[in-house]
Length: 390
Image 1 (tube, helix red, strand yellow):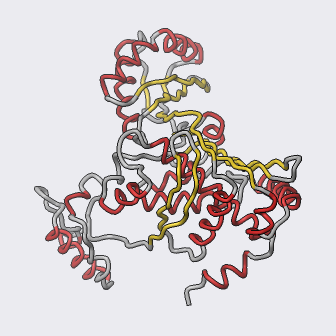
Image 2: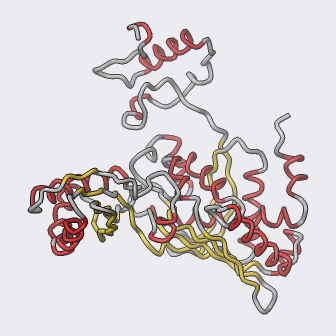
């Protein structure tokens, strides 16, 4: 690679409009692409420090609002308008319809039932007995390890250390609470501190890798479906049969049967989510609010459950066991993303559980609308009407 092929950088201050312009001009020269829109942005490049490297501009994704969504959660209560960024036509219209149905039925209850963010180091020994005995030593020294974690972070708190022995290796999952941050970087640092303390104090001075890949960071896994990664969130409501008829043009008995059929289809396919499309709403909200969008890989997994009640109403719930979201840190403080969080009063400390409840409720609203569109044979016609960019 010649010097002329290298992306321009300024070692002293790389986050300026001048450097962004130099890189945009470089990209245009190297690729032949016009970057007029990319280079038209309003934010100060300085605010992107820590969020991106080689800044040249912004990706302007269309942003809309859906709602209102009536929430009766433990942290989110009242009517909310939801910012969603997407390029998929009909998406916001569909979610708004689901939100209207939920609101007409009294709103969605939501709660966060568990918190747990992991880093999963693996410790290496000569034989399985050493690995087993190391596990006993970890249990005996858990309080000391928790103390080490506290020195690494003001926020991270070690809940437990899960243990899984394979051959002569001890795979662990260090599980934390991380306040209102998503916590991957925080737990990485805390676990490094803990592992170095373990190596210094254990008689065998075990070698380790900071990740044995068992936290399945930014990858779906059944482990996290069961154990939780991030926040385990449940959103639920009762769909009144009259509302279903009037607004969705479906019968709740047929809806119950349809959900059974769809669940069997999910099992055959080995799907990570048993409802229609959790990733759609989560992704649109993540882009809008500055979340790490790759976490959709974990956050979209879950269970969609329905129950036909004796009076003909339909109990409907979404359980998302691995919602990874934050209301401070990462991309949440970027100007656009902060404004979107502020629309829901979800920016800053003490708001992460509130955001998680809203996310689960939005997923439920999307499932209500799409399930019933399929059942009422309106799925294709709605996309033909609203979702084709002609």
